[in-house]
Image 1 (tube, each protein chain N blue to C red):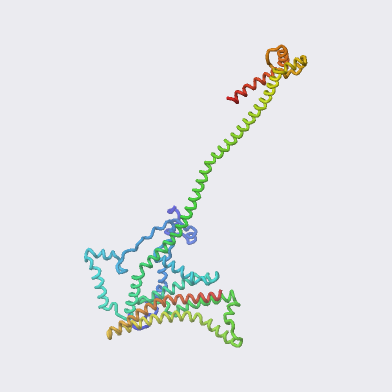
Image 2 (tube, each protein chain N blue to C red):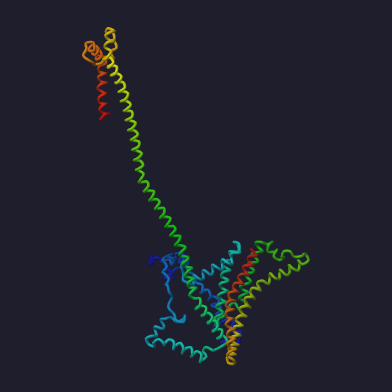
Length: 226
Length: 260
């Protein structure tokens, strides 16, 4: 199926038609809306989970920051579901593409920073200088803080891409090692298979954690700026 | 009305603006109105994928083992013809799917119960509100009924009060009557005792005085037969005989009424 390691990361195209659009839109089918008071178990569990996450994440913001709730909740649901779906065999994960993650990180970060500069200019500028720095260090520190500010969107995007891509790659490699070892020594293959199982468990955790981290950091940037 | 009003079906001849202006709104049942109930259990499946109806469909021809043999044959064909090739990804398939099946088998039921509990809590909360409201109204009704019952009994109080007042009035009346009787009796007793005195000694004094004491006519009563007494009596009778007679007359009915 896959000739080399990179084929699982190329954007799927069928007869020249971008299938990737459908793949990116697919997770929305897994979150049905229901107007009932008492729905089926699936919808009930999703509603409960969403309520839990939104309460935990948006309680630190003031009312201006809480207008971002819809955005952040959709973000965490999207990243979580695409990561988890990508763990299924032979599937494509959109979040392995740096282009997509940059497309998510840069607008969100820029929105938070511009909100901060528009509404609380003095406080936003004050973030460039931590409290209690000795006077000679101030110019240097301002430069460092500026760099750290501008690196935030890059860090967001690259963090997500690297984690998910590395995870997929490791699974592939260790699977290949198991396959190669099967004909040489079955015991070693079994050990390698155990490692693969553990890695799978880790990947499930990482998928969800990365979604959480991404959204948490965006909310943190928002909190600084509202 | 549906035939007369323009609809999307026969909008081809109309201009777009006309269509927009004559669009029909809310012609059907709104889908928020009574929603049909959800089925309680989903369709039965084997291996989580294959519906039970498939097995029932093959049962008449191939018995119980039919679908399993079919499945095994298909899988072996896929593998042997390398339609499905064993690659490194196969192992990730085994580990991922194995992990998922393990999780579902272990925790599936408890998660389902948790979801049911969530729904139950929601319904119980609303039910509690409803029951509290019903109870409140019921309590109000009971209190109102008891108050009405109390009001019904109030007439006893009024009757008692009325009786009390009637009794007090009666007592006052009788008391006054008795007082009147006593006063009159006193007066009459005085008259009688005076007459008795006159009858016993008054005549001698009368004789002594020589008849001029006849001026005190009120001292004379109808006593023993005596010319002077008759004379006095006739004088007295002329003057106030009617009144003394009336005294005597009225004393009798009072006496009889009180002594009866």
